[in-house]
Image (cartoon, rainbow, N blue to C red; front, side, top):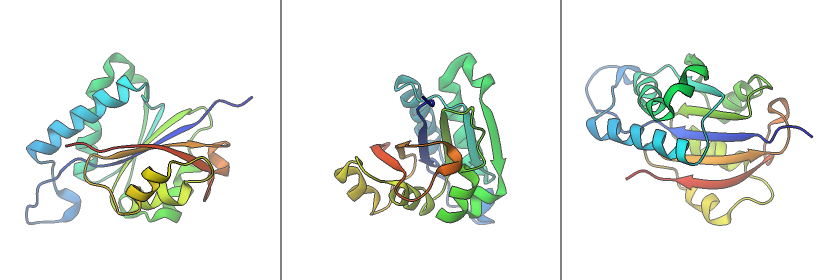
Length: 172
């Protein structure tokens, strides 16, 4: 039997609304707090990732760096792939990137942007998904929110309707 897969889709924490390029926007103070809280939640729920796909935007990289602090020494063992493609990805492109994840990864975390994070969760949601979570995700998710999906097969076979949408956590 294959290893159960878990996919966590995280919208970056709250960013500053400063002038300048969108890609260079840093986290706000509240975003720094949110990121730390997400790390603690993921650790408490035993969702420490084996592999991370992270947008190259400053706010997503900062979100990852702050949340990984909640994982303790195990954080050093996590494979991290910071990609420009995640910054610009729509759902189709994100699914293509996820199909490239090493098969050894049981839990994958994507640190990305809206509307792609909620749209990807909606597209992947298949049989057994929570109707309440699907309804909430269909309206978009706020910063530092994460959804948990449980794909049926391996990463290469990930596609529409191929995962159970199990949960959504929203940070205050």
